[in-house]
Length: 547
Image (cartoon, rainbow, N blue to C red; front, side):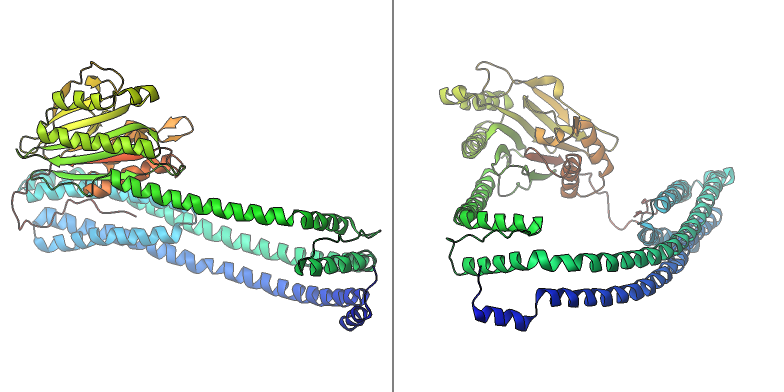
């Protein structure tokens, strides 16, 4: 390939490849020299920065000592209150209990990157909670007027034993902090020495390799690079007709680059079209997602009705892997006689047709309960709605849980059509109810019965109805299951109702690797405990919140 004279003059003004490589070697040598100096200085500075771990160790020790001070203050105030009954002793006890969670959070924040320290502080917190549990029992006895019983419990020494256990755990934590500090300093020293050696060796090797290969590079790269540069200028002008000529003796990478460049020219138009098609598909998918989200909002009620004597809450979580919505739905209707009818259903299939049928089933249910809400009438009518010829030919069916709740009496008439049995959380336990009287799926059998089982929501209890996407969240072959759902509800039983539902769905998502495979609906009916009066003393028995 012959270049025009103006290109030769421009190349000369820019410097030859040999000169460029010579300057590059000189520049690399200078950079490597700077690198050596910076590396040595940097390694020393890095070691000094690691020694700042001493400051972190002091902060950790101070934070650990603060929770010891909190517990000692609480113990002093508690013992004084139990023995004397003086209200002045309750203040340090109360203040220490209130301060402890924040101090524990601060300590955890300082230890979060050290698993052994995290384990040690967890053990410290467990021993502290055991002492707080014993202190609450003693305070309760004293407040109930059982002074001798409270003093006798103090004399038994249980609280002192638990305080001693806390002290032992605290000492172990301090020892672990010091051990981590010593290890950090030793690691920093080793890292500094290793860094100096490594940088020096790498710099020497780089200088040697650069000097050896520089002489060869200019002979095998100049012409191929010039040819490719000309090809790029041609393509930039829109000329795809002439290929870049092969250069004998070019390095393997440039030979492959030349071949790839020539293939790129022939494929460029196809690639542009493929990119445009991909952009169109992405826009279509986004449009489809927005459409399905709009349809799903039409499937769900705008809000749950307020009902005297119970609280209602619901949560819907769409499956993450698919753009298509499913047939999960829920609804609630306040009846004229004071009762409330609630329903949760899951219709087979996905997409627009499943959504339309699910919406029709929900609206049919609303119509039926408005006429006569008794399950013995509602369930067969819903079954008939799904028993048409078209539905049968397509194998359409639905699972459904229908509950008729009397808020005053707390009774629930429960009818299940192939649906997972609900969960009941009381002040004593959490478990599954009503599964033994489950009827068949809707739309499968013409003449079937769906027995209505009567149960009761005690004061303070919560009935939870859900679709199978909750319990069938899986990690490998391990299902989330009703037992884990009960455990999450029990653990969060003191949280607000909506927050309980959010935590339950989040727990199922975490079990399924943050990627729920099916839609999830949960609907809760809570029967609150009546408040006896106002103006009570602050409750000293509330469990301190830990980090």
